[in-house]
Image (cartoon, rainbow over all chains, first blue to last red; front, side, top):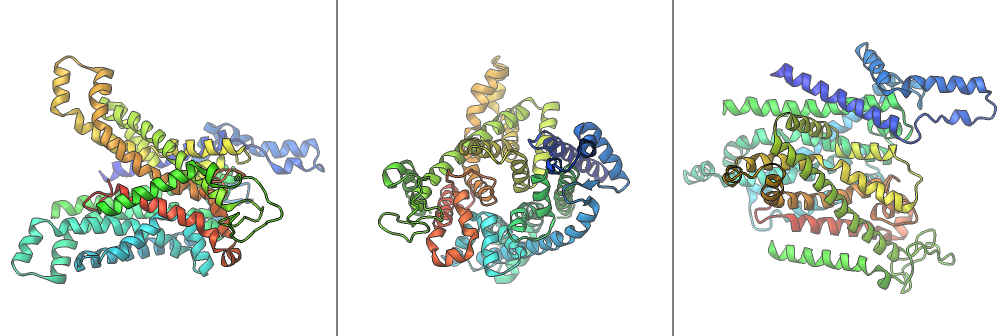
Length: 283
Length: 269
């Protein structure tokens, strides 16, 4: 089952890469090199520039060559940044991964903590402040959140956390509130159990696998938000790189980022699904 | 909850009405430049002042609201129709078509929504006429936003396909397109409506993200996203806090939409 899942993930990611490559190839502006506008260049130099891109004109040939290179660990060469893609990723990926980890963990833990407090407290109006806060965060585009944090002089990772928080809070609150109503919790309360014990042993624990499944969504949300956030905060991460690659029609760079992002999202989702499947029989 | 939802509906109605009657409420056009009043303070003539090109910010806000409020539902309608067609036929026909559609949906969902949207938009022409840019932006939203609704529609169709009334319709000799069109699709209406309304705020926010990065509606046509670009000038906001009006209106409208979509148990429909 695990092998089949891995095969499926790889196949989807590679098809995603092919579609990304096709899109770049078909996009207007592909194949135009600003260097050709230089009047000092003679026709041979212009021809040499054109031949640099010749391999990218046939998308099938390009993708097969790309895959062959990928098997050897070669991600291709970024023409717009004039550097190997692997080198660019090596420099920028750690920064994005740290931001994503911070954003996902920060946003998820804040959302979960507020959801637990809201469900535990259960006094009338106790959820007003978190509900308004999450509502406003949901209603703000990630780019505006990035601007706010830029004004405050805080890093983009805080903005990612704020983009993740409302989704986790709303889902967790609804799930925990629904679990609080279930018969086993009512029975536990009827037997005299109160407070934190009911919350953690009878509400949080049964809901934990479904909460863990949120990890996949949180990572996907965080990466999506990281692009406008990194662009606006001028953070040299993979989000900003993807943006530059799309604007410059940089085929090898964009294909690599597409495959990487698809792989990352699919792997996190699959791990969450497998954890959920492994938990259920044990329960 | 009901009272809050009523208030939200009234607010949405007021905003929609104000944008529809922009020509009556605003004293000038969204593109008219008043060169003697660059970055002017609010006054009776310009209730929200003017931008650095001397254009009436209030007029631009009203016309921008019209663009965002009319075209986000249009994009949502397009994505819901695609989802109904793709998800509905996948659930109805089953077999290889369903497997192919499910793989396509998985492929779309494997890429984060904003990554997909920003990348595809950046690949499309940026120096187009304002009207073309509006069409490109919202067609893109509609064409890329179908995957999540399609997954839900497919699941809903699978449930309906085995329902008693469809079995009876089949037993009575109804089949093919007629069964899909007359018996299945009308029963998918609640799911499709819910998906439509959920998509509207998502598309409004997506347009705002695109606009702020310069990939949305082209100047001089205003939209919320395009107007939010003013916020990049931090020092100007300190002196002109009314520059925040588009952001405030965006938050109010999206919050109202969220409130209207919430059901009694607090879970969005």
